[in-house]
Structure formats: C-alpha cells, structure tokens
Amino acid sequence: MKVNLKITNLNKFKSDLNSDKLYIDRELRKIIRLTAFDVEGNAKKEIQQGVKTGRVYQKYRPRRKHRASAKGQAPATDTGRLVNSITSEVIKGGREAIVEAKTKYARILEELKDRPFLDPALKKALGKLERRLEIMVARLG
Image (cartoon, rainbow, N blue to C red; front, side, top):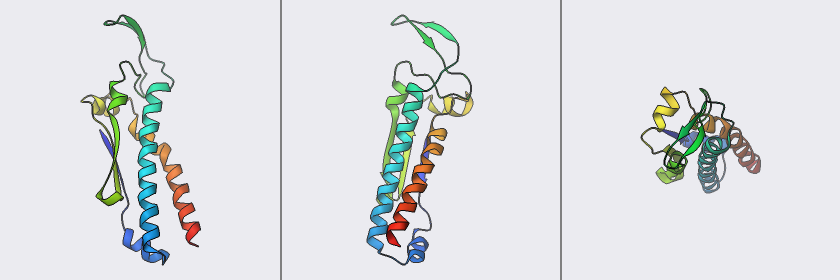
C-alpha cells in the first residue's frame, strides 16, 4: 500500500508566479519532502497511539492481551511490524514522494478490513502542505 505525492504542471506554476526558478524548485522539493515525512509520521502515530475500541483477546508467544482496532480505526499495533514497514522516499529529483507500508498485509488492512492509516495520514498532512505553499507564494510577492 502506498501513497504518491506529485507536483504537476510545475512549469505553468513557475511561469504564473513569474519568479526565481531556483528558489521555487528548492522550496517545492523541500515542501514535498516535509509533507512525505508528515504522512509517514501521521500514519505511524495513529497506529501506535490512536484510540482502539475493538475486541480484546489473548495472544501467545509471548502471552499477552491485545486490543484490536474496530472498523474505521487505524490498525492496533501488536509487534510493531506494520509501523516499522512504513517509509517515505523522495524521487524524480524531489518533485515526487512515495509513502509506503511494505508489509504484505498493509493493503488488506487499509482497503479490505477497513483499518485505514495511510489515506487519513495523507488527508491530515494536506493542511500543512497548503500552508507551506501559501508561505512560499507570500515570500515571492
């Protein structure tokens, strides 16, 4: 399961702003990188610290009680494997980033079991992305 962040129509954006090309490139790359880190962090935090109201059951090796997540909640962490598999990578010269959960069961949890963690993490990060873009544009003006 992965989420892509991508800036499109970059040339039109640059010409519309009629400003310093190098500054815009550098700032946009920084904004993409920071947003990818935000998405990664939001997903990990929600899995590890979010409210879980699912059923409680006995686990073994080691023996312990585990509270599962309910439908609509991020998965409940147990071994930390899912959280540790979530990574972000900036690609294509910094104009795109991928945030990905690399476990085999990540997509099943997110899509089939209704235990979303990446999609809500992206939605939460969009506000910061918008503010960062507004600040960049304000500095140009």
